[in-house]
Amino acid sequence: MDTIILGIESSCDDTSAAVIKNGVLLSSVIASQAVHEAYGGVVPELASRAHQQNIVPVVHEALKRAGVTKEQLSAVAFTRGPGLMGSLLVGVSFAKGFARALDIPMVEVNHLQGHVLAHFIKESEDDHNQPNYPFICLLVSGGNSQIIRVNAYNNMEVLGQTIDDAAGEAIDKCSKVMGLGYPGGPIIDKLARQGNPKAFSFSKPHIPGYDYSFSGLKTSFLYSLRDWVKEDPDFVEHHKTDLAASLEHTIVDILMDKLRKVVKDTGINEVAVAGGVSANNGLRNAFHEHAQKYGWKIYIPKFGYTTDNAAMIAITGYFKFLDKDFCSIDKPAYSRVTIK
Image 1 (cartoon, helix red, strand yellow):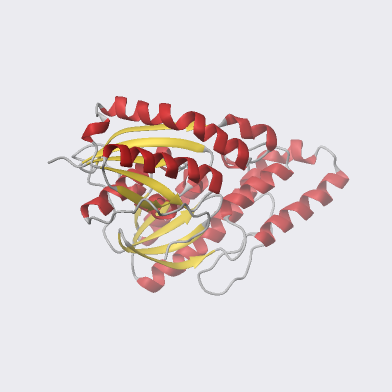
Image 2 (cartoon, helix red, strand yellow; image 1 turned 180 degrees about the vertical axis):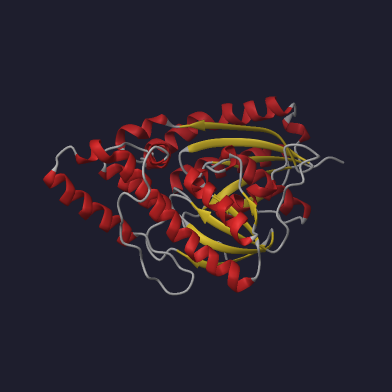
């Protein structure tokens, strides 16, 4: 009998639904919210309202593209957290009502776990490019920067993480300081490809162990920019490609330095990257360089699976469904949690 999972993701500002059949992706639909661009960041109240508008048509479209009726579904997998509470409540409430109406199980998914397991999304039966356990995963996004040892889909150990700001947040804040707009990640990435990564230098943290810190980098960037703009009011416009390239280079260098230490100390050379920042070309290039230099076997997600998406929720839900790891209807959403 076929196992067909509907995945629902609504943790931030993207409403997404996906359908997976026997581990193979049939459809993935994402509705993004442009309303936040005018505010330079996600406005929680506006995000939750947009989710309410999008959730029904997005799920309908995902089922339609998959060629699946709701009666054929085996279970509904949904993001329970972490994320914005108002946004999560829309997805969680919909999943509860949908599953209850169809009398099928619910499967809760940790959003961070979903990002890691995005590497197991198959687009066809012949897709066998998945990591072998155990592997090391660098999870980098707007809210998280973690190095994770993945022993199994349901056994993950955080070896290092940011003690303050995340890498993605640092990029967004620096982009905002430069007046480049939101979201900063894609803008910085595009400009960095045209600039000199060695043009400017910014302070790097000295944190023991495998943990990260990006608050000092943000401060260094802010103060440096302030001094340069005093001398030349048009400094940003004259040097924005070099600034972007130097910022990106510094952040990638910080990320890869700790990752190299973990790989060396654990002896695990299967290394993956996940999360929104894994779409960054500088980081992806660094992974390829390290694979060539150190013999790593690397796993880099397709661009469509780097940002928040329901396909990663559906594949996680598929694994949990096979283990009959279901969720009771009384479980609430949670805004903060990490991978345990």
